[in-house]
Image (cartoon, rainbow, N blue to C red; front, side, top):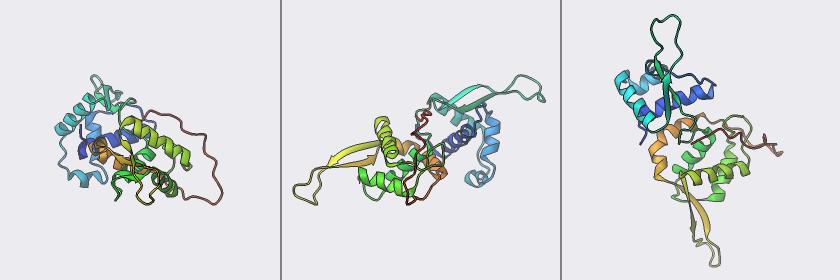
Length: 216
């Protein structure tokens, strides 16, 4: 499934709820109202219909990206509680903002294939922080995220001949796969959320690696 702007916006809204530790199931009507708030009213120009949103939610459920079930009932509203949605903990998609930022940067790079060490160095210089903390990612952690993307099929790795020197060995270069095209709109929203921390002169102590929340 290729995520259009509605699907990307829905997933992003549900991702923000999970980031804020809100694990409740949200009715489609509430999601619709939230999407039309703030900048959303310009993105959708008030043309987003509830039926179109429900169709998108059904598609996301079929793809295993969202869960569907009985939401929390308000005591003020009579009748049974409405059904609602939330981001699936097992969603087969990137949900870490730092990972998304790396993939989007590589996807939009002017070179078709970028040296692996360049990706790591440039990401480190940008000062990307962890998905759940504000301390910077170290080079080893960036390499770990790249390896995760290789295993999950968002990035591919090729050994390309280095023509700068006759006796030079082949270089490992990275590029994104069509899988990124399918979810690019959502990944861009996550990448825009990433926090940056400028590198300091003295080495920083990492928080001990990742707390491995599932991301796809």
